[in-house]
Image (spheres, helix red, strand yellow):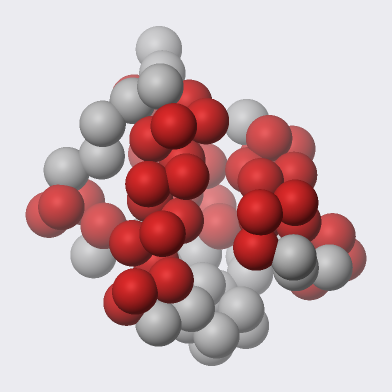
Length: 75
C-alpha cells in the first residue's frame, strides 16, 4: 500500500520519491494545503476504488496515517 501511495505522489503530484516515507508530514514536509489534500484524497479514491469520508481527512497528518486508513478501507 505504501509503495502505491508513494508512486501516486511521485507521478501525479511530482514529489521526489526520497521525500515520501511513512513519517513524512503532509503539511510540514510536503507543504500540502487543504486544496492539495483534497486533490490527494480524490486521487486516492480513484486509485484504490474507495470512498474517503470528509471527516476522516482531518486525521491525515503523515503518510503512515493515509496508508493505515487505506489498508483498513481496502480490506
